[in-house]
Structure formats: structure tokens, C-alpha cells
Image (cartoon, rainbow, N blue to C red; front, side, top):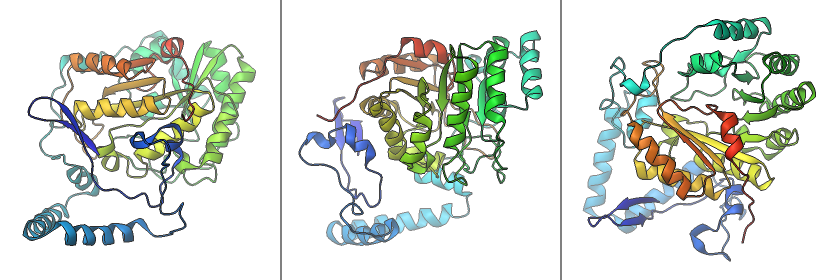
Length: 399
């Protein structure tokens, strides 16, 4: 399904054909799909039909071609086959982007000069150096360094940082992320205590704890995140704690390990619009992310999500994503410009103008989001304490 505007400027929704095969249906518990309250969403698996999605895809394609095809259908298939063979020599990263409708070669050159609103002056003063010394002393990892955050100088100079737990190696290989993807090491049981000590030594009023994805662990690393929240609570009871978590491959039991530690904010990034999910993060999923957020909101937590723009999405797609986030109970949304870390990562399709980010704030507020932080340099944890102060948790219940 997608929304577009007709010749008169009116919005219209176009529906395609979709089958839920083995999808997690948790997100549908908090919405009324298609506005039909007495018709719940099901999947083939929930009806006892255990079939692989690839098999369903093949048979569905054949059947649609037979019923809707003819000569034009054959021509479309031939064009698609030609495009596929042309793209087959591309790296999977770029091939997935092209399949999503974005030309990888039509965007911003890797070494193109950034516009003025994206240039950040390096400021390595005393406060910055003190925090670096602290992280080295306590053997801590910060996402500020690992992900190449452009706000590191501003945040570190003001004494704030986002601590990354469960090591510094991620089991996923997202097309936008700079974090190390080598085989992860074993968890360090002393890490929660060391993070808590850093919070105390920094005198933080609001601590942000994020993580790498650890699909190699039975709980996805959720237990260690919960332990870190508890350690911070014990060491600094007045500090509010925000967690930025992975989707734990959709495992509700893993999410419960985090929720049981009672963080003040549960943050999970949707990252991009639905059309570009497979290109940007092939090991995750749009609906799965909405489900994680919906479950946290249903449990009464203030929920938060973030996304980047500049991968080839439209303004309407970003607007629809914010509407989806609001529908599952998200209170806070952050939106910033995607910056390409290296030539091995997804290209930047375009630079979004500052005025466009201002428009996104207005759009998000119209959808009922409590706080929308949108600017070229906004990242998930940017001004996190201020966002929490203005947000209110959404109470959900299926009508």
C-alpha cells in the first residue's frame, strides 16, 4: 500500500496484494486495520498453514500473472528479468537499493562538499578530553565514536554520551552503519557496573544506553541491557535511563527482560520508510519494529523511535512512517540527515534542506506525537533529556 497525489493534488491510497505468511501479528493488536473492528488480521501460520514465504511468493506470482497478465505482463516480466541480470553484478547493498526504486548512481558523490548546515566544527576542549579519558579508564564503548556521530564534540563537551553495551561488534550488517561486524566476543559481566560508575562520575541526570545487535545470544543481549539499567538505578537513583534497543528478532521474552528493569524511555529505531527497509537493514523489518514499539507502549512505557532521511524516500513516505509510529503509541520521534560513512555504505540520494526538517516537525505533531526532534544533525540520542521532559506516554487499548 502506498499514498500518492493525483493530478488535482488530492491524496489517494493505492492497495496492492499482500499475504501474511509467518509475520508477527503483535503490532496489529493496537490498531484497527482497514477500519474494520470485527475482522482481525491473521497469517497463514496462525491458521495452521505452515509454508515458506519463498514458496508463497512463487505461486502468488504465477497466479497473478495468469489472471492479470497477457502480453503486457510478459513484457513486464522480460523487462524485469533484463533489469535483474543487469543488476546481478552489483553488490547486494546496491542491488537491494535499486530494487527499492532508487538509482545508486544518481545521488550525492561520496566526496561532495557538504552543505553549510551539515558542517560541524571540531572542538576538543577540556571537557571533551575528560570524557574520553573516562571512557578509556572504564573500558567503555560509546556509540558516539563507533557510529561516527557528527554531534560528538557538542555532546562530549557538555558531559553527555551514549553508552553502547554488549560489546562493540554487531551481528548484523546494515547498509548505513559504521559499527564493526566481525564475530562478537563474549559478554563482559562487569560492563553494567562500569557503565553505572561512569554515570555517577559524570553526574548525568539522563543516561542513554544503546547496544549492538547480538543475534548470537539466546536473549539477544536483552538480559545485559536490563542489568545495566538496574546498575544505574542502584548507583544513581535520580538519573533517568533511556534504552535504545534492537528488535531482538521479535522475541517478546527478550523484550520483557528489558521492560522488567523499568527504563524511563524505550527507544527502538524504525530507521527508514517501509519501501527502503530491506535495502537499509536486511536483517530487520518495518512491521517487526512497529511490534516492538507497540508492545512497550502497551506496557505503559514512554516509547521513542528514530529515522534518517536522504536514502531516496519521499516526504509523504516519511509522513506515513510518523503516522504509523504514532498509531502504535510512540511519543518521541527523531529525524536526521543520513551521512554516508564510507564508500562501502549506502549512497546519499540527496541533502534535505533545514526547512524540510521544520516541516516534518509540524507533520509529526499533527499525527499526535508528543515530541519531534528533526534537523540535519539530529540523531537518536540528541537532546534526549529535553525530549523526555516534553513527552507523555500514550495509553493504548484496542477499541
